[in-house]
Image: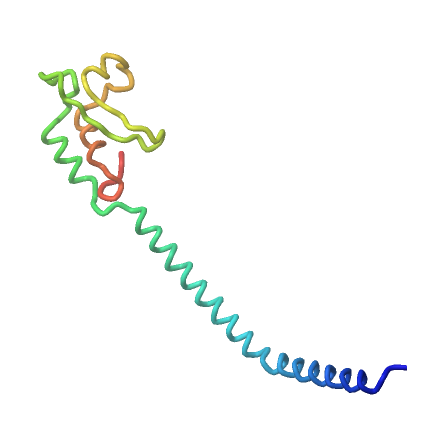
Length: 135
């Protein structure tokens, strides 16, 4: 048989459990409200984050003005039309993620790859994605 002292502890434990269960039921609505508000704030934050990420991916300026100026100054000139041999134009190829250098020397080494109009090489050198979209 169980001692009376243990019975008292059992009754106290049951009373405490009943009290905690009633508190849990009473606060259930508050928890649902907090969860709903948190969900709504998370949705708003995700929409805002997506908007910021989209804006960061766009360039700040229209490339048409740059292309017009390059066409005006360089026309259809190529590296063969340059008098000096020392002109080196550096750019970055986004597809292969490698730097690309344009000059008469590179054109002689690999004619198919480096035979581009001078305006395209200079335009590629000046088109940082933040400012101008790459061609």
